[in-house]
Length: 348
Image (tube, rainbow, N blue to C red):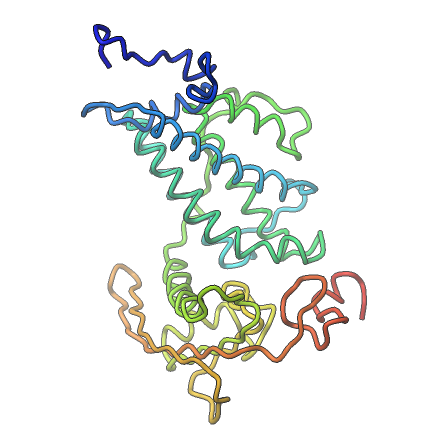
């Protein structure tokens, strides 16, 4: 920008818009603040409609994430409905583990006045860890289990903590959005300002490095399964995991104690019709199966425990029918509920 050239961009026009809204749309104060925070002040700072549009897109995705969080903690009272961390689903505990790490990094970044890093950390968390991963997995549990089921309460317990840390994390940068969210938290009867209730508060018991190996190994098999059916519905397929006896099998067994399940933590992660976990290959398989092989290196206790295990992912179309309530392929016929849904609605 140059005053002599007359190409200076007026912040008031960025916030409120110019005479021609089609050329100079009103972005609002939060978009401008997000762009400022993201800018690297140690190099030439560039501003353009594309840069502001990118900032607006970031905030739009953030608002969608917040809308999902607020909607799914409605009817939940943290004081009476929370599940102890040790009793939560493994994936929910894993998200608290990631959240504690995020909170620590964001706090350190603010102390160093590195606002650009705060923006990058937040954006990566709410797009990659939440929207693309966690939310897609837990929707079935949130929408289809009984309202008071401990499985549902487990992920709601995690969502409450995620919402609180997220809002406090971006409050210094997006104060208007943070205050708006804070005033609409459903379980707070008389909300105070987000700026009068302290900084991020996490618990040391959230930190569980051992969970990373469990989740990363399971996700490696999940990625192999989903990659074998591009563009298809995972719920229309059954998956069999064959893992040689050893540390990896014991870790995955934490997610599914029974051999075959359509309701286990492992099957929730796979998003399949049902998942079978075996220590050796089945004696016979149908002809229309897809087989994928891989290995995973378990690395625990800072490298003191290392073990590489081979695994096989076997994918086949399901023989079950689509449940009219949960839309998972776990019903015996298309006009009857699956056992899980029948129990949830009080049927037999």
